Length: 88
Image (cartoon, rainbow, N blue to C red):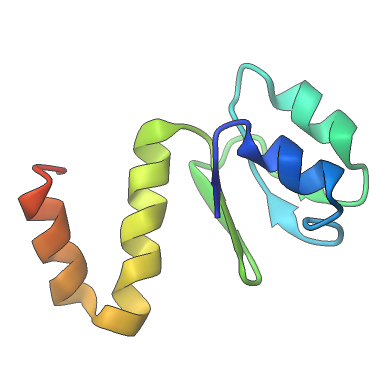
């Protein structure tokens, strides 16, 4: 999982090669320059590219984290965490 410009690090390491990803919108071009072997989706809040989840910014990262929690723990648990953290 990465948030914002963290996808640059994944690209540099070759972890996102062949996967769909996103990054911070302001610096998106810098992220895409790190890896031309990934499919970058510029208008997405978050992208699930196989086991790799990338988010475009902090609030999108929260969305993505709750999405990652839901499958193994259930939607009720994800909603409980959202409520506890006062995230709507």
